[in-house]
Image (cartoon, rainbow, N blue to C red):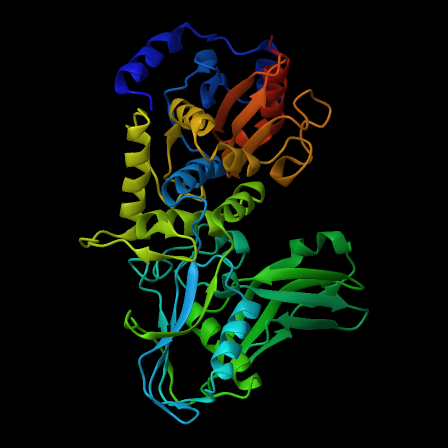
Length: 480
């Protein structure tokens, strides 16, 4: 552990690092019409800062903040952590009938999907239960509030897109509908998965002569029509090319409707019946567990989070830091004594407490949801760099580094730096939202010594700076 005194020493030598940006990087910024005042950079080699430019300035990190969430999750929850979904009930059984409610309890299970739900319900049927006389209770109480998404304004103009999904403790299929869209000269055929009880999809799209690969340009937010009978119609709007095939995933149904209708469709297909309605609630923890599903181990979730820059997974991990302790391989349990704090506040405290134990000053850092899909999150290159240094010393360094995209090979870096000595060697998390572009991770220098690299560009023309960031990483890979 680096003590506060050691941190003070670190700060003392940072100004002595190269303050002038590498000429090739400066030229690339100028070509993109980006001011050097919009850039923050820190390159660390061992205990020495090779390059420091406005490294103490608080910047918007975009998705590079995921390295904070995922590293602290590995450290705090440990690699054996798994989310868990349970089917519970304390109702009496009479023959093949459960004489009360069945509780579907969410436990931050990132892998909960149709197949796992069907397996759970099949396990209930295998125990001789055919009819549920009570209600289906959806228990999302692991997170406080249980529905963070309610009342939250859309982040941008695409609330139906997967990257905008806001998690809760019981998120089935990420609340997504997968659409198979196939057109000919006359009509658009639609197939929706999963099949939902009393939910249909139809086309209100106009077929046009256009390039199939650019079909998204004609996409408009779908219309949702709820009928008095309880049926829900999803009507697609916009334009679509003739003679085209594509797939799309959309988040358009309220998650209460979504889980309710998936459950009923699967349960009835398995020969089951349920008499009651579906409600939100909190199930008794002492109730019998009839079936359960556990997610993949944390390193696999972290890998998908960073390689694919998955916001929903990152936000689930961040909330898990505020709700769970990972001391059991097969599951997790609520932290005692919430004291009325929101789960986000607890997660924020968990991250800051870990950083302070590493001797990292968290002053000025702002955490929102841990994914970077935020206009308020802030972190300095110095704070990010020090966290990445701690990642090199971590017991779980192999798991963490394996989660980062490899330059020129995979994830969000698969098409970048292919002709650079950094290709297949640098492991870097990327970040992009409007007016922000960033990288954070590790790149070996010309001698193979690992360097921590953090660079963030904030400003109106930041998006044009991607090539400049690649120039910076290439420079690091050539430094002697």
